[in-house]
Image 1 (cartoon, rainbow, N blue to C red):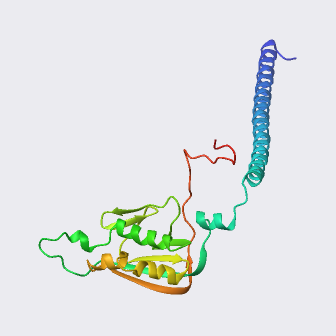
Image 2: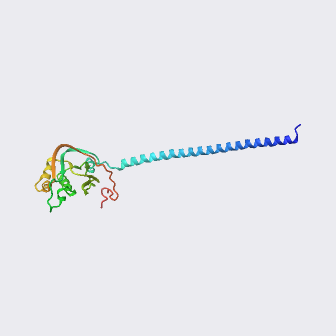
Length: 228
C-alpha cells in the first residue's frame, strides 16, 4: 500500500504533466488562429488587388474608346501640316555654311557666320515659294518650331546644331530654287559676307515626322459656330 507521501508526489506529477499538455495545446491553438488570420488577410488583399486591376483595365478601355470617338479624323493635309508623319516627295536640299572670309579689322565678325535670322529668311522664302514640308538638320518644322541662336549654335525644336545646316523642303523644286536665287534675294544678300548657300534640286527626298509631344496649356479648340 502506497504511503501518503508517495500519493502526494504522484498527484503533483500528474498535475504537472496535465498543465504542460494544456500549455502545449493552448500554444498550438494560438498559432493556428494566427496563421489562419494572416492567410485570411492575404486572401482578402489578393481579391481586392484583382478587383482593382479589373477596374483599372475597364477604365483604360473606356478612355481608349472615348478617345477614338472624340478625336475627329484628321485630313491628309492636317496630318502633313502637323508633322504627325514623315513625308516624301520632290524638293530641294539647301546647304548653308559660314563664310571662310576673314573680317577686316573694323568689321564685325558676326556678319560672317550664319545666324537664326538668316535661317528664318531662307525658311520664309521656301514657304513663300510653296514648300509643303521643311526640316533643318533633321528637325521637322511645325507651327511651334522655334529658330534661335544658342551660343555658337542654332536651336530648332530645342535641338542645337552647328554648321553646315541642311534644309530640306518638299515642293516645286524649280520655284523654290528661283525664289532663293532671285536678284536681291537671300542668297545674293548673304553672299556679300561670304556665307555659302548651295541649292540642289532633288526628285525624291524624305522629311521625318515631328519627334516631340505637343502639349497645350492655354489654347483650346473651338468648335465651328462657337467663336462668336
